[in-house]
Image (cartoon, rainbow, N blue to C red; front, side):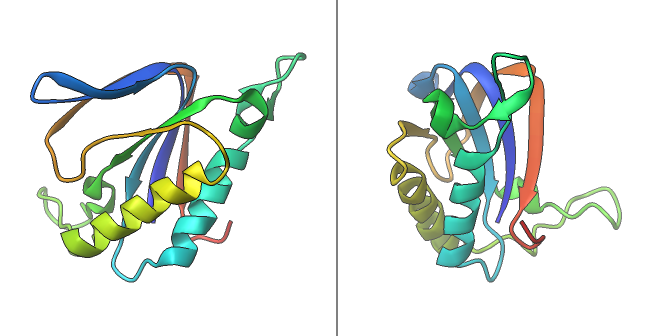
Length: 149
């Protein structure tokens, strides 16, 4: 699984011009599911996301996690994170999981995040979404479960 994690002041996701979910301060997690990913990858990614120390402490250092700040999460499925642009100019998505597998693991990821007691908002799987992100910092982190955490 791959994720782009952004620290935000607020964020929302809309489908067909209607806001389907939104958050205040916290994290937006754009998450992609790759071929061969399973439940363990979902659990590892969720644990990494909620424990990332990317929020400032009293000294202004990035030293606090989402669990410590009590922020919220907006998780949005994004298969394009598996776009491979090494050849030509049109991305190949051959390494992205098929929709049925990806949907199940995306839902498992949402459940894994919620198991930490945080408020978790989400996008709509396979919908054309408009994601409004007010990146704080900006702070953006890339995570990939294929790379050792």
